[in-house]
Amino acid sequence: MDAFLPLWNEAALTSLGFFWMALWAFALGYLISSLIQVLVTQARMQRAMGTAGPRSMLLGTLFGFISSSCSFAALATTRTLFQKGAGLAPSLAFLLASTNLVVELGFVIALFLGWPFVVGEYVGGVLLILLAWALIGLTRPERLIARVRERLGTDAEEAASQAPDWRHKLTSLQGWQEIGQTYVMEWQMVWKDVLIGFTVAGIIAAFVPQAFFQSLFLGAGDGEPGFLELLAQALVGPVAAFFTFIGSMGNIPLAAVLFDNGVSFAGVMAFIFSDLVVLPVLRINATYYGWRMALYILALLLTTLVVTALLLHYGMGWLGWLPSGSDSVTVTQRDFFAINYGFFLNLAFLAGSAALVGLWWRARRAGGGHHHHHDHGGGGTSRGTRLLQGLVALAVAWLAGGVLVAPLATG
Image 1: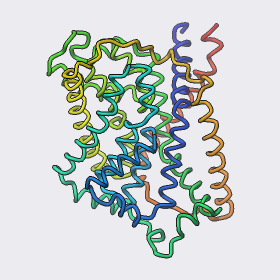
Image 2 (image 1 turned 45 degrees about the vertical axis):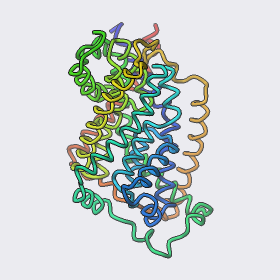
Image 3 (image 1 turned 30 degrees about the vertical axis):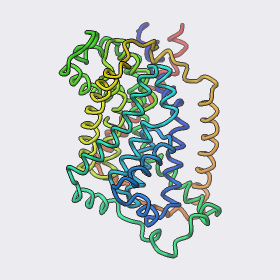
Image 4 (image 1 turned 135 degrees about the vertical axis):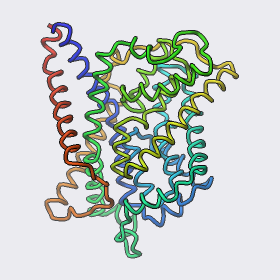
């Protein structure tokens, strides 16, 4: 018990720290998604991203880059783009760009892993998009796409020619009430998955020894692994990410731990790229698109990330840029609650979120809370809902207990 209480406290604080670190990115991503849903008409989106041509792919990548979103928020925005008429390939280009080609992620990777991994992240992000585009062209999932679009539906009210101009919505109280309501709906969609995922991540970080991760990767610490060992590590990377899911920002310290324990460049990059192929993301995609499309996207992203990780490893080796060591620190040594730019961004976005929630509440009390752009495709069995609710209750109890035992843990 004396050893358990400090680890419980550490796990709870780590989970809360992960969320605090990513809070502003969540809020930014959901704000972007809400603005797109309310302000961008289907016709306008179809003109911009309605095909899978080079221009559409470039726009999807550019929009993803400037969104600078975390993986959960990027999922919501991607669903919005697809529902508004964007092609599957440009939508996935947005998703991959917004979780890989972002500036703040490069800073974190440079801090924990060094510049070769920064190069790998950005070059790999472009490769992921190109490979996904190619695989969609080869597999031609037109029937599946058609079924998903029918599932998501269209908003006839918005598509009508008399729909208010986006400038009018952006400068009117009613428009911002719609944005506030959509913002609240986005949080309602995924907060349970976020809570459970971050709680599990803190537990893994605090309780699971580093040797466990090293044992997962065949050939780790053996100097220069062969092709089969590299392939095995690139395949195991998504498995390790499944059990340690934190998000595209928070998993970088754990990636540094893996690298310190001898995991290859390919294995570490596969782990970093795997934030979109874990259970919480799969469940959210299934809620949005149905299980067939969710599993198709999962297989597509798994294939592209493994191939990309191997190409990066051999490409960096050919250039002589393959890293051989790292000065990483363990994830629990990070000061999540430091007074830095993230702290002030969180305060700003908390204030903005409070304003949007206030607008939503005002519209709801006035009886105007009818605006609903899309079908989330909730589905699911009552048994699954009860299981999720039970896990949420356990996560809340675990986090609360872990914080409350702090005096006993330090005493």
